[in-house]
Amino acid sequence: MSRAVIAGYARTSFHFARKGKLSAVRPDDLAAIALRGLVTRLGLEPALVDDVLMGCAYPEGEQGTNVARIATLLAGFPDTVAGATINRFCGSSMMAVHYAAGQIAIGAGEAFICAGVESMTRVPRGVSGRHRREQRQLPASVLRDAGRRRSVPERRTTPLRSRQLKHIVEFDEIVRSDSTRSVGA
Image (cartoon, rainbow, N blue to C red):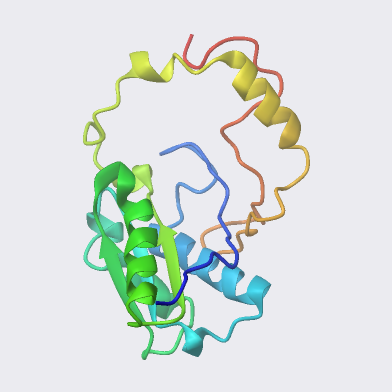
């Protein structure tokens, strides 16, 4: 039985839904940027990837159908690389990791990319079910600490260069070092 290992990771930056710097960028394009960033960082030939497994809690609109397959093709991977979208709501991306590990364990593949994509800008309002009251419970100290760390780009964040963006985006927009109160207070 083969053992699965995580060889690396990449992500794009987080931004506010509907009003953030990435609100004009399609989720399949965001996912493709992260996929390209990962294989570049690892020096991995995309043709060696058996499957791209991508979690998506709300697979509708531009992140609907099979966003994993679409992002794989947009990333420039050969059409021999499969792509599957997994929906387990909040556990979608984790389920992708479990699925890939299982496939490796039974010898059904050697190299998988597990990912997740979600653009709440593209999901109709009210679908997520999260209440503003819950969001306000995030302590201000957590935001301040994250804001201080934000001054240096996280080395795993993939800079975004997209036809929809006028500039390169490499920082999380949702954290502020000057926060003195809870979110939404």
